[in-house]
Image 1 (cartoon, one colour):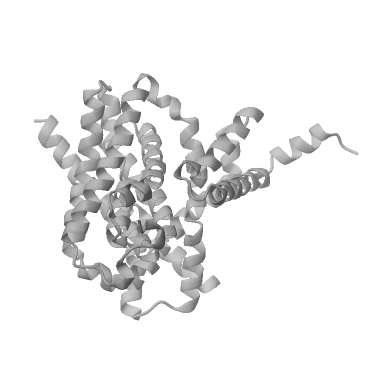
Image 2 (cartoon, rainbow over the protein chains, first blue to last red):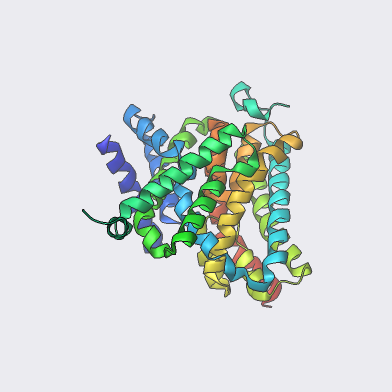
Length: 124
Length: 240
């Protein structure tokens, strides 16, 4: 487990170095994800230990956003007088972006295979 | 024997109390979410954040003090982002089959996110400072803050808008997409990740691993698309 945790940290570290060194417009961890992905392609599979560590980290991904969320709510005052137009814009834009992206994807993507179809909770 | 005040003074100086508070608030959040049968209004992140903000306000605790404990949770965000490579690899064949569709939908989503947010806020009379800070709100926080800085907005305001967009997308996404009869896990994941980056991805993973893989991919690609397209368009449209 420590080996695969070290591997994940190393990918992040390499990603940080790469983005800062080359001035890439993505965050270090996203570059690290690309590096680990490339490693998996070369290796040709996901080792069991890595699967356990990765699934463990991702199972509670939502929890990891809580500290940043707290910081943000304490700074909500930055919106000032603009809070109403900006709030309406955020909600409307979220709805439009979700609908536009999903509609184009559902229209253009090749027909789904069994495992790509609906998650149980999405069935009408 | 020490008084309660002494014990409080000792505890409040230790990171443990705020680390425990973070985990406990999230536990309460997930518990309420299950009890409410997955009502989007009881989004676990939203509930946890509200509980913690309430506690910090009541005890007069500064965010810096809270973060001394919460940083251990926050730190894992980086490694967890790297770990998204695993579901992406598992479903790479699916991703490759729809690569063209992914790129077109992603650029559509990225442009819709910025244009609709800025357009609507502008019509409603928001200040130029707010408009600048609003434009990259669907990109993941570090990228969005970098873009805002480059355009001349307020990065800390962008952080507020990015996280709010994340929570909104995680709440609205699944019921809205079901209402629109979009059942394809690839389309659901891609839309949620493009709109609401990591917080959306955390929600998409709960739907299915395919949705999670597409959402994680969309988060990474939209960071790239927003960083490249937005400054380019901004200068073309407004700085001529």
